[in-house]
Amino acid sequence: MDSIQVKIAKKAKVSQSTVSRALKNHPALPEKTRLKIQKIARDLGYTPNPLIASIFRSMRRGNKKESLGTLAFLTAHPTEHEWKDFATYRDFYEGAYKRAIEQGFTIEIHWAANPSITAERLASILLARGIAGVIISSRGSIKTFNEIPWERFSVVRIGLSHQTLRFNCSVNHQTHTLRLVSNQLVNKGYTRLGFAITAKQNAAAEQNWISGILLWQSTQSAENIVPIYFPQNLEKLAFLEWYHTHKPDAVVSVNPDTAQWLREHGLIIPDDVGFALLDWHADYGNYAGADQNNYLAGEAAVDMLVDQLRRNEFGIPDHPRTLLIESSWHEGETVRQNLHV
Image (cartoon, rainbow, N blue to C red; front, side, top):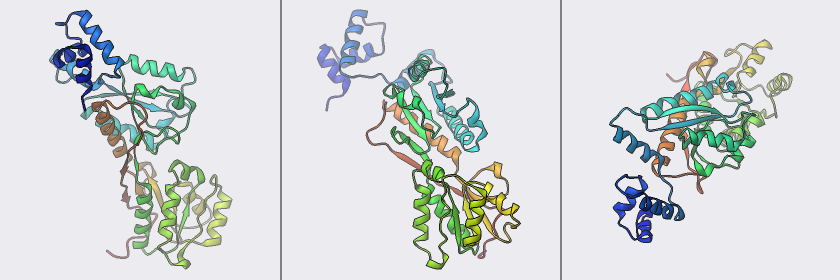
């Protein structure tokens, strides 16, 4: 199959080298020739690669340290800086920022939920700043995301894809995370694991938490299976009632509040009951659980985005790709030590 530049050359009845110079706005070509070839290119669907253009600009200036361009890091929390209150999103950004610098890019934070600008205005701001690559860091569903003209951008999402906007994404392997935590607890002698997950948390993980729990429970004996505590929202009294009804010997949750409720009710962790988090952060100190390595998801998102820019891939892909990041176990004081050491 002919490349796009071959097709342009045939249509314009010029050589491929002339097409190449015209698409780069080479001053050696007459303006009339350049404009003619560029119009034919647009008519044939040619889209210039912004990454390659940045590289050529840097080469012409003789500055090897010049940035290859800027990537956007889109947040969508209710307020502009609220994302910084969450360790997960801070890790996403730190990983993305580190890898962007290593790849020769700078990165800018833009608030997609800003009520004072429209989606079209946000797109115009990004394009005016020469930004063609976008990282979406929020899992929230907002109207702005649906209205942005994504065909103008190369996009990667950190976290599972929006239900209607299926971008390529990097995300924690939640099913394996569930299995990692369960196996660690079993190795410590726990047999009746109680899982406390809200419907909202499960929906954000596209049902992966419940899928992982049910898969793990299918391998256990009937007497060791504890019914899942699966409310719409966490409620202290309902949670404690669930605990006293089923008496798991270890509780697994996304939210550390449940551990505090157990303590407030007079239980000693880990003497009376073990406790492990499915999404441990340094903010949680001595809790045991799975470190989802969210900074690696940020790094991976940049790697994916740069590759897409190199391939000139824009818009919503027909067949999105998902890169899964494995968790690491974080030993903590809320569980007993392994039986087998």
